[in-house]
Structures are given as structure tokens and as C-alpha cells.
Image: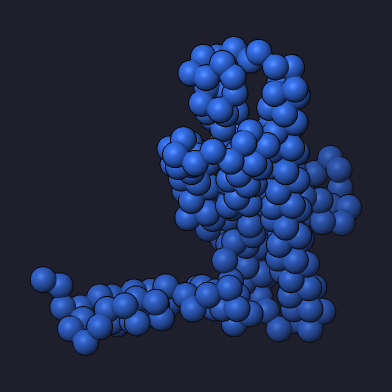
Length: 254
């Protein structure tokens, strides 16, 4: 019985909307005339999201779900259909291979590997003499099943590698953008140190960012500027990530 929805403004930049309309626009479109959608501004509006994570899922959640569905349900349904139509073992192998390739294109490596194993089991059990047994009497059929699994694994590996390369390219573009922004602001002197540190903190998904300085290698570190939560970092070694900035300065991220 909700009548109103309150959302925070998106942190995405203008160029990021080429990948989709965003949460706010989607909610407004799907809510219909009975729901009022309110967009609330905040400090992070249009400042961009963090960098793409170096690890984790490289494909969207929906694609992975569809990959598992095609990789598991597809071979089972195909086996039922082929039991009613005699197309021959060669055609059956090609049809099962098509499903495995589809699972690889949708869900990546793991769903495709499972689909290849499941498909080879169904081919062996239902379509390779002797039927309904896990044995193969003709050596040619063994070769066909081995080739089927090899091609399926190869295609899945290529798709997974392509997804990984795409993810790395997205991260490099994001890193290039933030470095260009920071360098330009430093040269023009338009942004305060705290604002620059805040941009670095959010870009790399950290809780705090601090710039430390010391006069020589034997002097203690002093904090020039700091943003974020948590206690102060006294030395670069105490941070989760430390990056030298010149000879006697360091950027400490936690």
C-alpha cells in the first residue's frame, strides 16, 4: 500500500547513462500513476561510482542465472525431445554443443563446464549404444563425446577470457579518467586538498584517505590532509594501501 518512494540521486556521470537509464528513471517509469517518486540530492551526485572491482563476477547476475538455466535445463529438455525424434548421434552432439555454447555466452566458464559434463552424460546414456547404460561399445562414439567436451570447454574458456579482458578495459578507462581529473585539478588549483582526497577515497572504494609528509627519511610522518572515517594513520605502513607521492610524501588509504 505504498504511495511514495524516496530515492537518492544517482552518482553516475553523464557518460555512464549509455549503459542504462539508471535506478531513478527506471523506478519512475515502473511505478505508474499511483506512486510518487521523490529524488533527494546529496554530496556524491554525479561524482561517479567506484572503480570496477578487480575480482568478482565479471558478468551480470541475470546473465549468470540464464547461463545456469540454459546449461542445466536445456540439455534435459533437449534429451526428452530427441528421444521422440531420431536425428542420429552426430546431429544430437551438435544440438547439445549448441546449448553448451549458449551457456558459455550467457554465464561464462562454470555453467558451460557443467553443461558440457551434463550433456555428455545424457548423450552417453540415451543416445550412445548400448542405450541406458554408462558404457560405449563403438570407439567412434567415444571420439565424438571427447570432441564434444573439448570444443565446449574451449568455447567456454574463450568467452570467460573475453569477459575478463572487457572488465580490465573498463577498469583502465576508469583509472585513466580519475587520474586525468586529479592531475587537471592540481595543475589548475581549482580543488582543495580535502576534495581531491575525497575523490580518491570514493573512486577506490576506501573508508579513509590521508596524505602524509615528512622532511627527511628519519623524521616522523605528519598528516597534511585527511578525509573519511576511522582513526588517523600515523605511518604509510599502517594503511591498507600506501602509494609514494614524491620523495617525502605518501598517500595512505584504508
